[in-house]
Image (cartoon, rainbow, N blue to C red; front, side, top):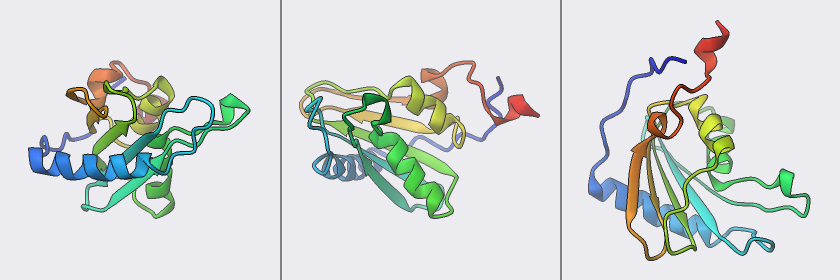
Length: 143
């Protein structure tokens, strides 16, 4: 239940805007024939690399992949596991917060991750992952 990972500084407004642009572009690539909601994510690693992802739905709904987990899996498969910021954008008007599974998945690598979430028309929302998943279960709990 500890969050001993260092917290990166909150990113600048310009950096957040850049990541949101990448996230909105990723959302355009979403495969969402069932929900009709396009979601994109842009994950910035500690070294500055950015990994994007989009939601990929499946007729067997439990197999659907969220944009956040797609971006994180792309980063991990490239050997990158330290993250600082994630932008999440959707085709909905209001911000669409990450689901519980994505929060837990991201916590594995970056409990101090800063998240910025924006819909196509609504206001922007920002918070640390640890605020969205308080008292999280993580790697330290297995030691």
